[in-house]
Length: 177
Ligand code: IMP
Ligand code: MG
Image 1 (cartoon, rainbow, N blue to C red):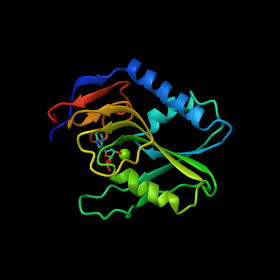
Image 2: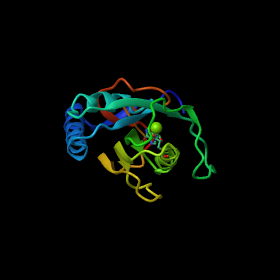
Image 3: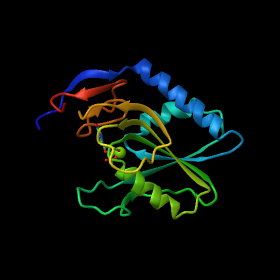
């Protein structure tokens, strides 16, 4: 692929802000009186996380993981952390924040890995879920938008070949539809 270019806008800055506020309200309600640890997945979730945090009214701690992405053939249960969690998770309510769930494989494996820390609970949140490719059992508790296209998307922290994270809206990457 040559230098990637953005095509049509899918979710505007305003539409995203609206949904992020809605997800935050659900988290505030669900975790009222509690103090969860947010575990955000680098790098794509950072913009979403930053906006989400500013809407939270419950006290939270924030940590990050970075996961090596394997090609096909990796058995479920295997995951390699380039950066693992640093905060203790035992007995804590954990909220995983990711950018986009495609097959659900990454999130399922991350959840398994976090369970070994014996948290009180694990709740998963993603801004986007690609509906057509969903092949694994549902692992997502809260989702911003159901993405009904096979096209690659980028913007609002989500990259295509490390580009477009700075865009404040989410776009289809040209030529991937
Ligand atoms: P999964 O394990 O198939 O659910 O893959 C999820 C990961 O693939 C996401 O966290 C993204 O890093 C990446 N990904 C999947 N689709 C897209 C896309 O359209 N744009 C950018 N990254 C994507
Ligand atoms: Mg990711």
